[in-house]
Amino acid sequence: MQSKLPHISTSIFTVMSQLAAQHNAINLGQGFPDFPMSPELIECVNKAMKAGGNQYAHTNGVPLLRERLAEKIKFLYNVAINPDTNITITPGGTYSIFCAFSTIIQPGDEVIIFEPAYDSYIPNIIFNGGIVVPIELEFPEYSIPWDKLRAAITPKTKAILVNTPQNPTGVVFTKEDILQLQEIVLSNNLYLISDEVYEHLIYDNKLHETVMKYPDLFARTFVCFSFGKTYHCTGWKLGYCVAPENLMKEYRKIHQFNAFGCDTPKQIGIAEYMTNKEAYLSIGAMYEQKRDYLRGLLDNTKFVRLPSSGSYFESYRYDTISNEPDKVFAERLVKEFGIAIVPMSAFYQKATDHKVIRLCFAKTKETLDAAAACLQKVH
Ligand code: PMP
Ligand code: GLN
Image 1 (cartoon, rainbow, N blue to C red):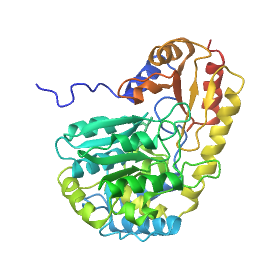
Image 2: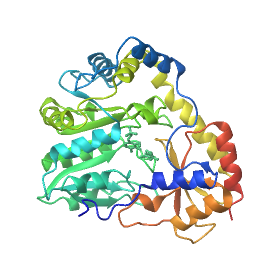
Image 3: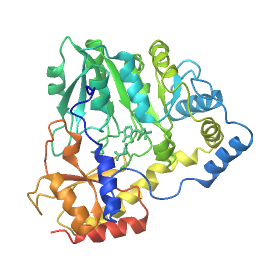
Image 4: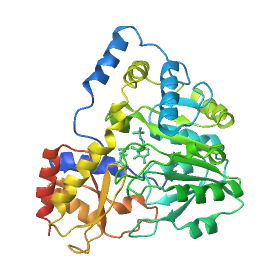
């Protein structure tokens, strides 16, 4: 058959997790917590199942969950969001982003993304008939080259995708960044997709700058979130999209005839659990401690840290150790040293290789100790 995605191969996360399993390696590759999620939240879902919450939920999501999300957004960001018209619950953050692309992209439209980039964006854009316009963040700070962004805009540009805190670099947008972005989006009549799945995973006293706080920019934006990141249950694949009513109306046409709805008992369970604000307010400090713990363990190695202030990833240069291409180095780390990581070139369309690896620190102290013991031996 004729492939719709001829140049797309297996996701690097699947590849690295498979390699880790094959070689019985510690897995700091694919991003997921290896510690248990909240037993109370599991209990809430159990209760919902036992109470019969097992049939189709409303296509837009369980109403109470959307209400709780609107309350949370008001509480955290002081933004008024209408749960009926502005929020749709989705089967995961990735789907939420895919649906946003499907809503806006017409064949031949250009969509700008920043690289290194989370791996689903490119295939999503291509699948929807769009043309990917990647802009590389400036190495090694991974800062945004605003002049290059301005220069990349053409009459065909339809949208920009941003991700803050960013996977894989851990870069966090400042207010000034959002204001620059706003000026560019508004003056060129673009749409914005804002991937904010790591909203709570933010460190060094930084604050999450959600696009929702900027009304003129939000008027053209789909903001995407993931319960998997917030509640340490990536396998649940539940997320949501927040958008202005006119955009959400079109978004829901796609969602309605794609997934239609999402897992009912988990929505009911999360709605109940969400009254516990501490559960999400404490995440930043918890992960910051993990990040700093891993930093401490790797301080006396030859790996050179590229600091991260968000997400559960931190990157390290290895050019003081080896000149191998990062994919070759990654394979050697699994096979010879028993540790799986993600080679940064996997996040670039052109496979740009700065000899950097991404580590996930969403792990127990024991896993981080074991991982560091492997990395300390690398030569
Ligand atoms: N965006 C980014 C940047 C991510 O890292 C992830 C996590 N995989 C997602 C979106 C999607 O999350 P989900 O697992 O809910 O689809
Ligand atoms: N977001 C995770 C990461 O970046 C994994 C997502 C996936 O496996 N699809 O590692």
